[in-house]
Amino acid sequence: MTPLTLIHRPRRNRRSAAIRALMAETHLSPAQLVWPVFIHDAADSVDIPSLPGIKRFTVSDLLRECETLRKLNVSAIALFPAVEPALKDADGREALNPDNLVNRAIRELKKHFPDLALIADVALDPYTTHGHDGLLGADGDVANDATVAALTVMARRQAEAGIDYVAPSDMMDGRVGAIRRALDADGHTSTGLIAYAAKFASAYYGPFRDAVGSHRQRGDYLDKRTYQLNPANAREAVRDALLDEAEGADALMVKPAGLYLDILAKLRAKTLLPLSAYQTSGEYAQIHAAADRGWLDLAAARDESLLAIKRAGADFILTYFAKSYAENYKS
Ligand code: PBG
Image (cartoon, rainbow, N blue to C red; front, side):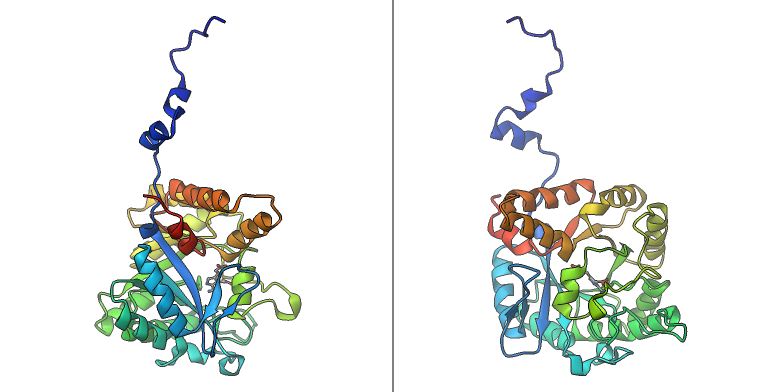
């Protein structure tokens, strides 16, 4: 048949794997990934049923994992503790203990892997009996300024232990500036701060809350809507994130990632800071669950979900897939 008279045939640029590689706009390498890891103070590492392939590690098993991660070129891990119930109280005081599990782990990790970047969450939820990220006021809501005071102490202890980046994930107002000033006053001017800048009150944190044992009291999904962002709001998210930049954050984060690509793209246009995104436990779990049923191809869905986050504007990504992506990565 006579060919259409077309000047533009975009398919020419997709004809072969080699041509597609030349034309690729987005690249994601293991060096741009951060593996969130859970640690606990117990004899053995244990599986987390809602996070297939992820464990609550003992610190010694985590050291072994880090050996593998470095070989795979993953740049960083983000530490989360599963705190023994006996160490929890309403104020999350264990978070401020210089020798708590996270601070001990930071010291060990830095000793053995000085070139692996370490990120630690700053929020009280793994340490509070009620599971909220801060201290409760008389009205039952999380009290902003008292929480910020506690978080600055928590961050100072992590800095003393040798953390590379503290990452406040609490969404209190003014915490980035307060933490920055406290770290600088202690001489920790090189300790960085990655702000969970646009963190939404999402239904996609469930498996994480299982992992740290915070969470769904009496089966209810804990409501954090007085401090985390409304999923309906993009302008408010950008405004809140830019406040974190003004207060001295070294990098901004959007969380969850895959459902909030518009926020990533908008922020990318508004800030010159590095941008990260957190592919949450729920995003990871849903891909696994569908793959288990044979409804999605695990590796293909994993790679596409991460590439989309990168394309939308993330410089680096926190993802439970970090290790498996790196294991399967062909440069
Ligand atoms: C808590 C925190 C949460 C996550 C990271 N830090 C949960 C929450 O806000 O309830 C979620 C991570 C994930 O779902 O993978 N400050």
